[in-house]
Length: 200
Image 1 (cartoon, rainbow, N blue to C red):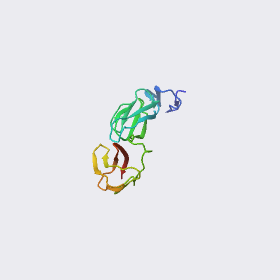
Image 2 (cartoon, rainbow, N blue to C red):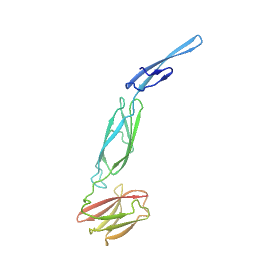
Image 3 (cartoon, rainbow, N blue to C red):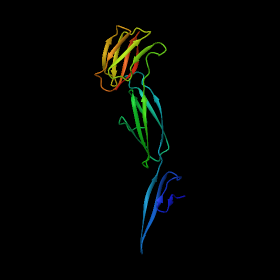
């Protein structure tokens, strides 16, 4: 099967690569012939292996992109502007990538999340932080620890709020925060418990 059906070229079932289509036009006693170069590819199949950041503000996360299929040279465009196959030294965040093969066939992989590893096991503590997402106030209930300090940090690692904790039940006003991802950090016995907070 050469992919030609009358005046139509159908690449279904063909191997990847270059093809030359020769077409002839007849108009009365006049005949013209020309050729068209056609490159057949396929949409790459994408998967990832993600390594989370060590803390909420660290930049040591990574994404190992796994690509199957596609023809010839493969190009990559990430949401953070990078053009390499894999990413490293990443902060916490959501990433996406568009992968295109030499034939122009492309695939997009969205919502690749770099999360973080907490400094305290969730088996050690009982903390209730709500609502999350929030837009006005956030309530914190420390049920079995005596944390000494609370910090709220934005996605750039900048401390927005830092305050000593005087009660196991308190509220934090976030009404002036811009929409985005923040991190509540509770300091406890020389450790730090971190909870992601979304402001909508």
